[in-house]
Image 1 (cartoon, rainbow, N blue to C red):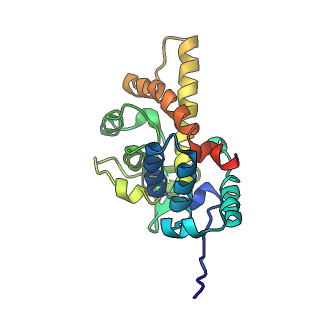
Image 2: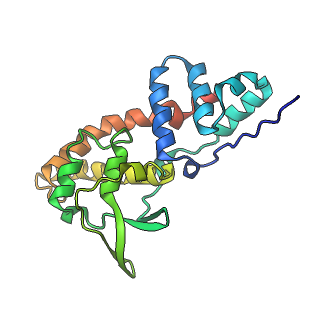
Image 3: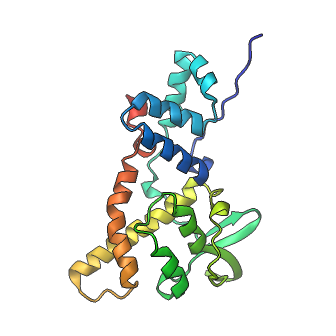
Length: 219
């Protein structure tokens, strides 16, 4: 009997969860020199196609799926979302980084870089905390207690995560420009400034990955 296969194709970064993205990036790294395998892995992870079904696709269907995924826009223009909702609860981004608690800074600076990797969900859970008060464009979030909700933030969409990452990338650029103009950069503690500098190379490498550039999808 002929079977009908329904394939859901993500059309924006908001359609992809952080957990899915990280799993895919890990697999892509293992096949960095095999473009055909990387294309197949993207289809398996993003479209939830089982490998055995992927092999049975016609060349026309396979190329159509490649073309659809190639329609993703670059994430570089995605802006930070001050508020997100997870499981019906509203979370707000740290409203004032210069006044972030020592504990939050200490836990973030345990990471060598700030980029979307295995530690990113932990960083997001530090930066986004439940909103306890809102008034106009002002708001307060729960004090940082050291609780890490990384599994919860694996549910967040990649549009949210790219927005947070590029907020830091832009902040990093501003800090470096400020350093060139003056030796007195007081916006953030030295540890955080050092992390931002080291993160630049990692972020650029992330942006050159197949999932972002789609170079192999359009060949």
